[in-house]
Image (cartoon, rainbow, N blue to C red; front, side, top):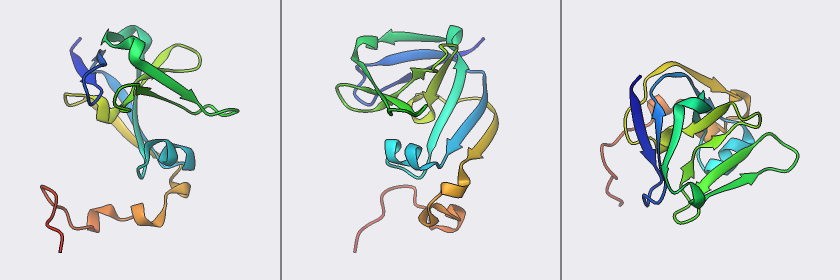
Length: 136
């Protein structure tokens, strides 16, 4: 089983996870957009047995949205999103952007597209740049 590493932006937290992801969920629900500040959350799910903290587990802070099954874990130093365990403790939810290496994903799934904002539609038609474009 191949393992890959991930970390927060400042490096205070790092982890290792089996590179055997069945699905990548890209969620456009209102709560995931608010909690990430982006068009959607990109999360991978893996068995808790296939996940190990390498350092900084004590620097992980978790926010649980009251009354909902929505949470976010982040680094107390830099605020980057980091993995958290599912409510039943059987899975780790890994923010795809926290991985330092490419993930092997069997299937990508978009969910709650009915809540996707209009500005996040048809992104393949938006001009793409390899770097930050010059401002006028």
